[in-house]
Length: 136
Ligand SMILES: Nc1ncnc2c1ncn2[C@@H]1O[C@H](COP(=O)(O)OP(=O)(O)O)[C@@H](O)[C@H]1O
Ligand SMILES: [Mg+2]
Image 1 (spheres, rainbow, N blue to C red):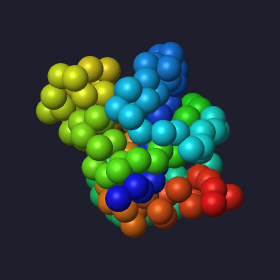
Image 2 (image 1 turned 60 degrees about the horizontal axis):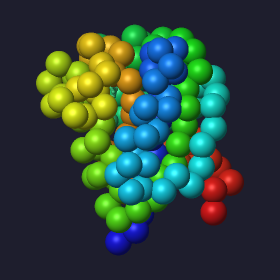
Image 3 (image 1 turned 135 degrees about the vertical axis):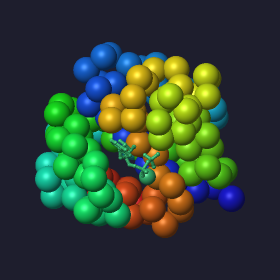
């Protein structure tokens, strides 16, 4: 079934000029981009996006990282897009992520892991609502 997912290129990847290469991975997979915006994440947005991690040891570090520069927020559509995007992104820790995945190819460490992807259809709907409230 066609579904939508949310992918965010994080500040380290934007700083390093990797936006085009990362978008190509998703385009090459056959998914269609339905929305994109570059923005600086405010604390309202980051606390909504990462609410599930509030209280974890890395939470403050995660917020500082996400606030450290611009991000590129994107919405993608296609069959099983949530699972497919997570597969293209790879494991959370770039050290564990397989070669050929985005984190495996471009990341160095878990605290700067290049890209975010929704982990389920309900998460995708929630996260798309935060970044693209007008997306129909
Ligand atoms: N141990 C950690 N140290 C630093 N940052 C972390 C750690 N674990 C997770 N993070 C950060 O928090 C984000 C959200 O974590 P999680 O939801 O578990 O991973 P994923 O992004 O793969 O869904 C990660 O992408 C990463 O940026
Ligand atoms: Mg997650």
